[in-house]
Structure formats: structure tokens, C-alpha cells
Image (cartoon, rainbow, N blue to C red; front, side, top):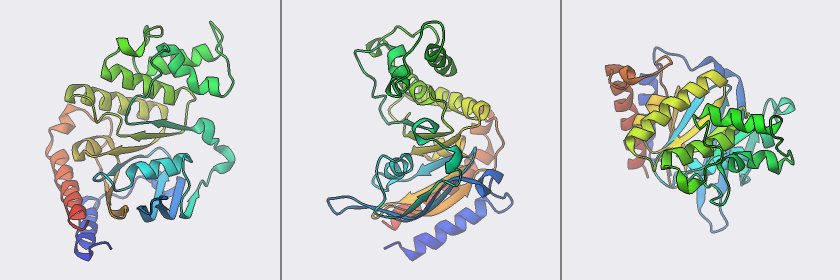
Length: 283
């Protein structure tokens, strides 16, 4: 069961961080709604319990918590890669949403085909939709546009073995973007990268999110990354996975190194860190 002290303290922290700042307007018009969602695996493990979460249009929401708290499971449920054991996942805009093309998923590892070029890796979702590339037009233009978004123009014919870790992750992101999704799900995509590359990709991701008006749900273990990227942070605890606090990050975009070194950023990190520590005490 959830520890009462940890729950109330985490809730108090959430009120503190958002006391003078209302939730983003997008949060009142959800793109996806998870209502009382639980997930129990075949081995009996209860990965999520009674999860209630609205994801608003154009939000950048981070799911923050320790390993085993169900963050990745929540993403897979939203993507339709697995089904809830109980509860419901509702898409209020279902009439205008096509999950096959309107949801992009970036996994923890790049998961690229080593025998295929960068172009062919990015083209895979279009190929699965039976849309063959045509030189000089059609899906070739869509692949080129996705590669341009992530700064990989000119690497179309390269192979994964010729790329750095950061470049491989950029290919993975381009593959998720090639169908021009409205909702981008990202499962700790930068966790294995060095700090310099991670900061660079954080900045690039924010620029893309802002320019393309996506909705992003981003899984991370990093308090600092979640505060820098998000306008809302959902703190989760494990055994079973559940939400224990939500925090609004009221800093404006665009964000840069000045924000990273500001007292405002440090205060957000302090409050979110406290909330996470309380959540882990209740495990």
C-alpha cells in the first residue's frame, strides 16, 4: 500500500511548486486519458495500480520514478503495445487520431537494423504501411525531412556501425518522426549517452517539440532532465506502480543554459527531488 506520510508530503510539494502557476491550458483538453488503469503481468507482478493520468495536447510530460515503477509500462499501454488489466484508456479525439501514424515511439535503445542504411532504417514505418519510397519524391522526401529535423542530412547512406551513440539515437528519433505523429512517446532515449551529447539532444528535442507542436510523454530517471524539458512532471513510486505527485514547471520556453544555472531551475529540482525521495521511502 502507498505510505500515507509519503503521499501527503508529496502532494504538499506539488502544491508548493504550482501554487502561483496554473496547469498548462493544454491540460484541460486531453489528447489521451488513462482512468483507473492497472496492469498485472502473467507472472503475477502488479506493474501499475489505479493510474489516473490526462495528457493534454501540446504538453511535454515527464514520467519520473525509480526502476520498476511502471513508467515504461504506461508508455506501452498508451501506444497500444499491451492492454490494461483493468481501467480504461480513452482518446477524446479518436475520430481524428490514427494510432498507426499519429503515435511515434522512441525506445531506450536505438534498435536499428545493422544491415540497413540510415535511410532504410528511417523508412521502415512507411514501408510497413506499404508505401514504397520513390527517388526524388514521395516517401523519399518524408525520410529526408525527418533526417533534416534531427540534423542527419547527408548521412542517408551510412550504416549504424559508422555512427556514434548520439547519432544512432537521432536515427531512432527520425524513424519515430517520419510519419509525422501528433503524440511522441520516449522511453529514456538519452540515458546511455554521455552528458554533453545528452544536453545537446535535450536542446534539440525541445526545439523540435516547440516548432512541431507535438505532445510528448518522456520517461526518465533524471530529476534534472525532467525539470529542464517538461512543463509537467508526474512522479511515480513502485510496488505497485502508481502516481504520488505532479509538478508544474512554470519556466517559459525556450529554455537554455541560463535556465539550467538559474535559482528557479535549482528550486524546481529541489522540490521534485524531495517528492521523489518521499515516493521511494513509501516503497
